[in-house]
Image 1 (cartoon, rainbow, N blue to C red):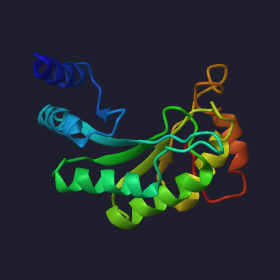
Image 2 (cartoon, rainbow, N blue to C red):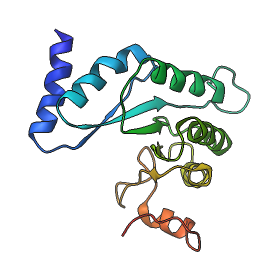
Image 3 (spheres, helix red, strand yellow):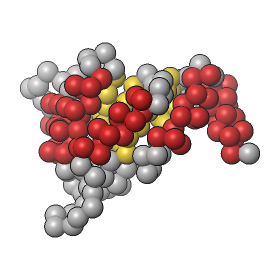
Length: 175
């Protein structure tokens, strides 16, 4: 059944040297994260739990706000889902920097300083660099980037662009 495949997925990733699995449900159904999280941990992998984010163009109603992401995070904690890190995943690349700042700040307050917190976004709406700076300023520990020529567009922002955007700050984007 599907549970067997979820378990096999974690087992094969561990067998072939993967150390961390980023586990997400596009609709933020915490029930769909629980079993896969247990398989990930059972096979000795790091579990990066994910809360999926998005936004809509100005004037459109219906996108989730910080309160929804807080509710989802609290549901994960209440369900006892074990995780080693938490990623807010803006798979559409549309979440605005203000929402990201507020969301990362909220999560940092709830989780404390010891939990690794990161943001994943795409360049789709053209605000990924601003979104990443907002996440870093709100207390994120990490951001995901891509190397040129596979950066931008529906991918992540370019590493060199982020290095330039954070020049003169205390943010260390790695060696």
